[in-house]
Image (cartoon, rainbow, N blue to C red; front, side):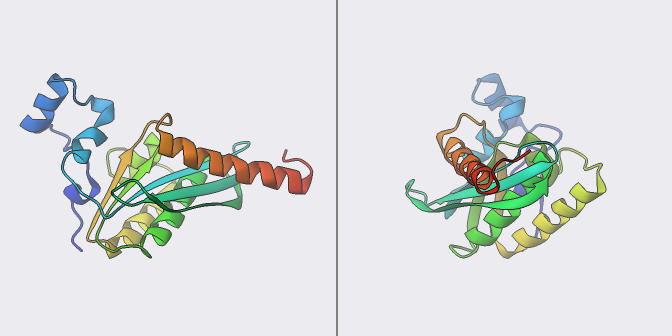
Length: 184
């Protein structure tokens, strides 16, 4: 698969005429460029991810939910991943979800995250200044080469599917806390 800006579903740094028109009509805002990509792709699966830590760093968990285009949930899961920062947990969630999604399709996939940092770093909009986060970005970019088309878009945390995954992650952390007696 040849990777390009269009594979990552990002707006060019100099907005296209279409982007300017959609922005002026209120269809999208500069912070919601994911609306523009949603208008142009038809993925085989839609994947929602979340990662969280209690403490930064602290005990962390990740989760995902995979949906078909009709909205049926194909799979959802969460797991405890040890001590991580919140950003690391978000990256861990995306890596795990990429692995799981590849068992459903190697065609077009669209991933959604409520972490603007992760979305914009993976898509090349933000620079990755921390070395350990650069490693995550490289691993993600390498792992998505298996898909015919890959898009990662920002989704506000109020989105019902992001809320679902957030609940999975918090359930895992609550379970780990109960198992250990308490998580500091």
